[in-house]
Length: 140
Image (cartoon, rainbow, N blue to C red; front, side, top):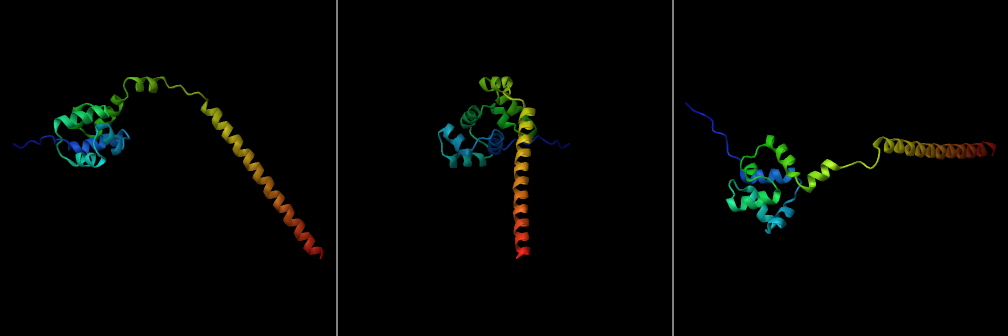
């Protein structure tokens, strides 16, 4: 009887994917880890990353080590949700819009209407000028 064992996550690819999901550039991760960008690129190509380095990466990315070791696309949402803890969670939860989006929309529509009217007036002036020039030519 053959059973399919779950495939272990490619740790380097998992680090890369988590980094991308969190919108962190290689250079930023490298700086936080005190290594070069090329070293981060090398780490992201490794199938297995040594435990100490993996722990440092997980701490820097603010994700559990197991999230990297057992990474799959479905768990990505949980990683993002768990990343917003502490002050950032308070900011996200307590964010209050300081303007009414509908008012902004109406304001934009009004501005567009005024611009349209100005453009229309300009075009009418051009037409009037062209008609005058045409009449002057006909009189000659």
